[in-house]
Image 1 (cartoon, helix red, strand yellow):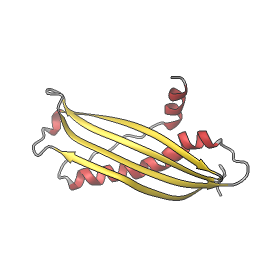
Image 2 (tube, helix red, strand yellow):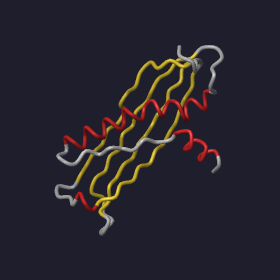
Image 3 (cartoon, helix red, strand yellow):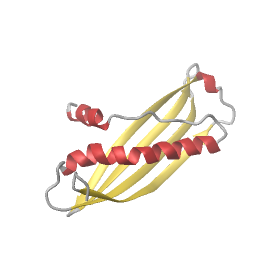
Image 4 (cartoon, helix red, strand yellow):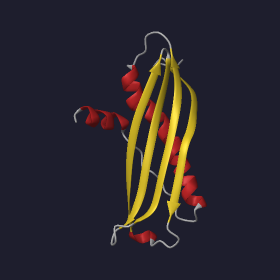
Length: 135
């Protein structure tokens, strides 16, 4: 176990969907990323899902030119007292662990699609969790 008391067991790709238009003006795109985080706990096992929806629209026509949906889950075990609550770990730490795998997967898909590599920017999951609590 590490200092939080949680141990990563596995990261699994559940869903990967990617589509692009055959002809794209790559200089005229703007991207949007949305995330959904969910978790399930059974005894000392925690499953966290991160769904990442990405799209790039043409700035002039507002048409979606590139779209991707990637869902990954991570499985953690924990025992006894943890230094972070299960909810906080599920909403902050676990997504921060999963996200680099999502980023790499999307970069690889875009490269294989014959287009400039899509690099998702880092996300502050602490701030994201705080904003979610304040809604």
